[in-house]
Image (cartoon, rainbow, N blue to C red; front, side, top):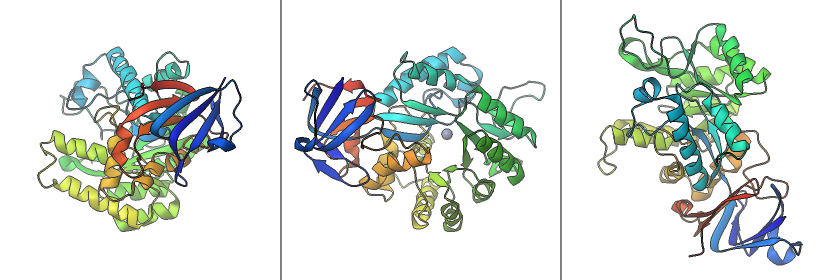
Length: 401
Ligand SMILES: [Zn+2]
C-alpha cells in the first residue's frame, strides 16, 4: 500500500528546503516527491502528517562498531578478552536499534574487535526483520600486521586473542579472500597503529602488503577502508589505492592534496577523538588537549584541500545512538549544517557506491527521517527525531506534540 508523507518541509540535501512538498512511497521505494498539489496520490494511500517537521533522507554513518560498547562503561581489553561473544551480540542488537531510532538508516560497520564475524549475523538478522537496525555494510575483522595490535602486554607464553586478524606478507591475500567469503562487504585494514619502540603511532603494513589487500578486495567487488592517523600511514594507504581513510589525526595539507587527487574519501571521526579526550580527563570546557588541537588542524587541512569528507563517527567508542555528535562537530569545526548533512547522506552514499540511498528522489529506497525544526539552520535539530522509515517500513513515529 502506498503512503503519502506530508511534512512541513522536505530537505533535499542536493538542493534545499522545500516547504509544502510531499513524498509518496510505494512498498520500499520513493515513487514521487514535489509540491503536494502536483503529486498524483492514489486514493487508497495512507496519509502521514508530520506537522512542524522537516523530512530528510535517512542518515548514514560510515564508521561504527556495533559490537563495541563505550569504553567508559567497559574497557576495550575486557570486551575482547573477558566478555562472552553472546553478551557482545546482545549489546549490539540494542545498539542497532538505538542507532536506527536516532535516524541512522545505514551504517558501515568497520570491525568487530574480537567478535569474529558476528557483524554478518547481525546484518542478516536485521535484513530478515528479526531485530530492528540500520542497513549494514560490514567488514568482519579488521586486518592488522602481526604484533602491532592488542590486547598486548602479557607473558610471552600466554597466547592472547587479538581484537583483529593478524597477517603479514602475501598471506594478506588469503585473509582478504577468506573475509569476503565469510560475508565482508568492506575490507578494513590498519595502515598504522601505535607499535614498535615506544609504541608510537607509525606505519604497520608496507605499501606492497596494502596494495595486495586492495587488489584482492577490489577483485572481489569489495572496497577498502584504511585506519590511518599518521602522514606515513595515510601516504601508504593512498598509494595502495584504498577507497577511504579513517581518522587522519595528524594529516597535513600535502597529504590531503594527495587524497583529493586520488579521489579517496576521508572520515574524520571527530566524535571519537572528542570522546577519548574526555575519557582521559578533559571536561569539555578547559582548553582543548593537544590531540584535539591537532584534530582541528587536520580537519581544516582536509577542507582546504577539498577532500571528500564523509560522515563517520566511530560510534562504539562512544554511545550508539549518539551518532549525530559527529555532524554537530563537523559544523563546530567549520562545515555549514547543509554540508554536514550532505556528508551523512549524498556524500556517504557515493562513498558506499550505493545510488539507492542518501536522497529523496523517485526510485530511491524509502529511507526517511523527520525531525522537528530545521537542521539546515541548526544541526542539533537532528537530535529531535520523531519519525524513521527504512525501506518503506516505519520504525519510529512519535505522537504529535
Ligand atoms: Zn573505528
